[in-house]
Image (cartoon, rainbow, N blue to C red; front, side, top):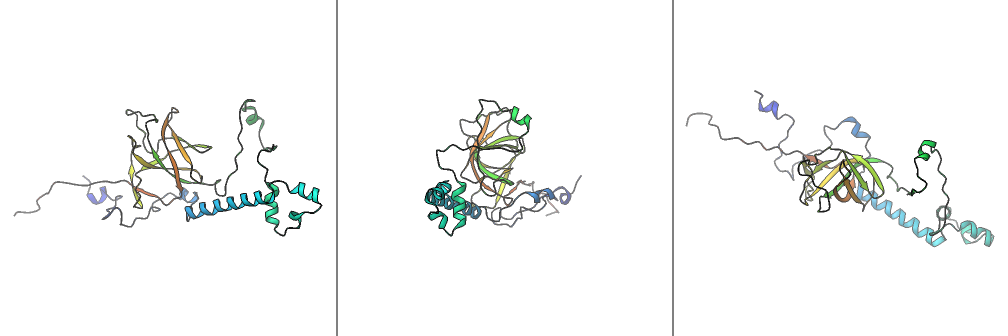
Amino acid sequence: ETSARDRFARYRALKSFRKSHWDPKENLPETYGAVYHFSSYKATQRDVMADVKETDAIARGRGCGLLGEAEAGEGGGSMQDSDDEEDEAIARSCAPSGSYVTLTLEGVSPEAYARLSPSSLVSAVSLLPHEGKVSVLHMGLSQTSGCHRDDEVPVRSKDPLTFRAGWRTWRGRPTFSQNNLNSDKHKFERYMPTDGAFFAGSAFGPVTFGPCPVLVFREGGDVGGEGTGRRAGRGRGSSSPTARCSAPTPTGSP
């Protein structure tokens, strides 16, 4: 027999699941410190999107990609006389919409080039700041009627799945939890919820700013879930609920 003190040593009692304090970063492995963490994901996303809109406004206002033509045609036009060198550099680096651009890729091995089919379509996509980092991605998911369901083989937490977020594809082992809007603690789900229930999935992956649709594929290639990316960061805590109950036991004679 094992005493209750030893049996439940790794469990914690919460007087209130919503109000009790709980540090989600305790008892984490040392490698978890290498994951990028946002002090405020919403503020970072807001600043990045504001910079993108500002760059777009500068490019449209100054003539996107037309700096060389303005200098050659006017012999020192208004853009050359401008004191804002940063805006000029932005305008010079942009390409007008609808123009043909030649891209040269360096460091491509012959083996990788041989795998490309002559009829294949190659997409070139630029990354926003911080989107080249790896963090913990939190996604709001659900299983709708169009998703493949296999009641005999349910999807467990930490099973390998394939994620498609926008144009990015990666494999990960997500953990599922309930999506509680009014709490900073979320109950761990051992299996992926079914029947259209909304839940959260957390997995390591590349930072992707939203709004971004997400598709989840099972091992066989069937769609297992769909949703949207919520945020990235290490601050979301999920706990495994364990209820202990027993029948009343007399401790002495009445």
